[in-house]
Image 1 (spheres, rainbow, N blue to C red):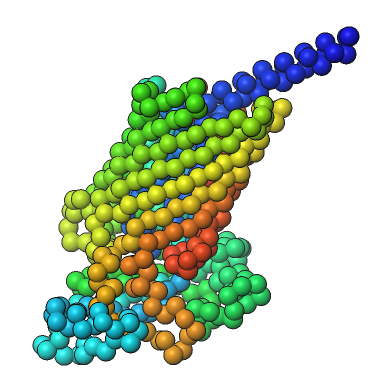
Image 2 (cartoon, rainbow, N blue to C red; image 1 turned 60 degrees about the vertical axis):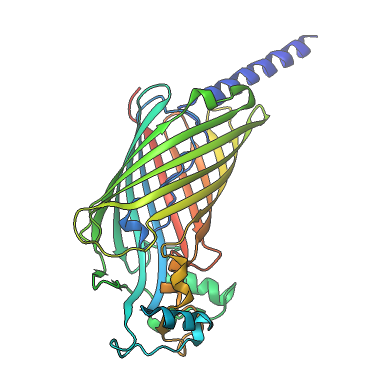
Length: 405
């Protein structure tokens, strides 16, 4: 009888302990996710929307530091965009790599022209402050900066060229499938000349602050269903871009929903999805580099997270994120552009620098988070399975610390 009473008491105490853990929102608040935006060579000059997967504003001010490292490789490629509607129609009838265009004579066949080459390991450093404003409102402030590197050891263990080409040669992809070895490993070659004659060029160890982002999140009570464990939030986003290449202001909106599922007393499953729409360059302070003819960028995120709590009030969370972003350039131009590159010298992908600007970008991110009452530490890696190479492979780390009680 005494053993049975002890067993019941232990079960009740365990249930209370885990109940307290799951209800401590500053400790575990929705899906744990550091900033995992891709280190895209255009995206880093503009603000982009990162989905908010919390279920309520934080109880305290939270400071977060995020570090990302992504390998981007696009060989040199040139693009011509004929202005004559008749020429455009003729080229649209031919597959892109077989189009013939007299790009030399601008008088008889006028055309816009651009070229691009991107070969670097791009590192992002981001500082975030999330400030609770009330029971239903939160303000996020984010400062983003970037460093352009060759990606050599030991600072880019997984994202350097040697590691990626070793994977291609020994596991999947074949020997030098996109010409990294042909052009040389661990190089910085970053230059873009847009169709208006503006030039963007970056070099080894270039460091710059790209912008400041202000994010307001509203957690409406009328959309929250605690009994069903359904939570929603709406965001408005203002981005102030500060580089000399794109001094401008962006504006966007987002909407996110989260479902919490209790598997047992110490295991929880979160499922979340969100969408956002950003208006790039709503205001330009002076002439900017053309970073895409699409002025609106739409994003969709889907997330699933499994969390296991410990008896010491800690947790381990494992999550997967699928992210898709609309194309940077208007799709209609892909019907008639003429691309030139070293297609005879490398196996494939020489056209990606321009071609992928007309494709939706997507990637998968896998995240592990360890949390205690004092901090949360996240590790992640991101893979682009559609060979957008923007970036090809990315890793990162995120640290969150409450700084007030």
